[in-house]
Length: 136
Image (cartoon, rainbow, N blue to C red; front, side, top):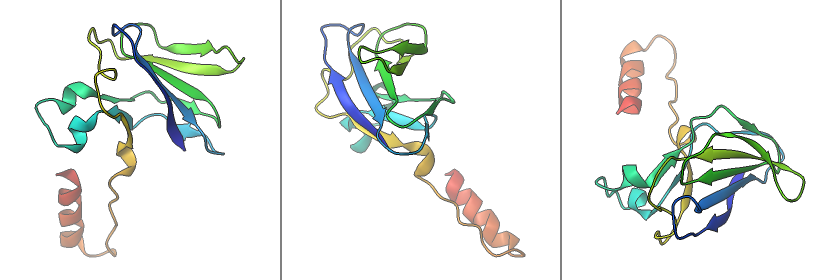
């Protein structure tokens, strides 16, 4: 279970970051998780694309492993932490702060948000409608 454990505000994008941790007992794949501000939940289409980061990395996070998303630029890699553990460091590449000026930060699992139920075999028309609904 991936959770936000820290939002570090800063004066610039290069000092701003968010720390996530897998607090579950099984490994979690990072791909498909997203961080966003309230603009996504408010359906503010003019702003939410600028205030959402989607993890596209195929990184498996073992239990209690951490991810640090830096707002600024850098090279993605695993790095040791002060407590002797390792954290995956991801970089958004932005020059402006996002999280410091946001009221709330939300963690979403986009890949788990839609489920396509397969109809019984032999019913191709129903199968096509379900696939079309899932695609829209």
